[in-house]
Image (cartoon, rainbow, N blue to C red; front, side, top):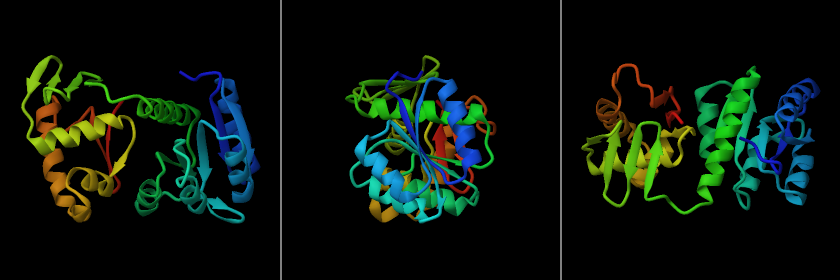
Length: 230
């Protein structure tokens, strides 16, 4: 659910795309501010910090990743990249640079709004102290007791599996790259050991999912990372 103060800064140089996004957002109660260049976007973000930023990467005065890097020096506002670049490498670079999500053009209104809701909900959750019990769907994680229940049944996880699931749950709905997961769970020296991640995610699915071959919660973002469905 959006709130009256939810302001979205749309950074996009193509007027038809700006009109499409503006119409979709204003219809659903958002206040929209627009910029067509990096310079204008940085000025608007600094003067009146938005609640969320939709960022195109291909801008006339530079790459949107330059703006993302500068924003992340002082702002924690969620950033969703909107780009025609659909390669896995582009998504990984943007997410590792601090983007919260990545939508490849063309996309539909429903998908855009769903990603925005998740990003705003996650941003607000980050502002609150960690809850002792975190629930995502049927999955309940009790940090104090170091226990996980799925649909009321206690599931025994290894320490690494617990840390991995807890990290995904804290960022539920958001894709975390292989590098981000490895850095947080195994440490900075393990960011290229993607086989660690594959092995433990497979084990985690066997314990969490009713059908590990068709997961409903622990989703793979091919070539990018993993997402716990919110």
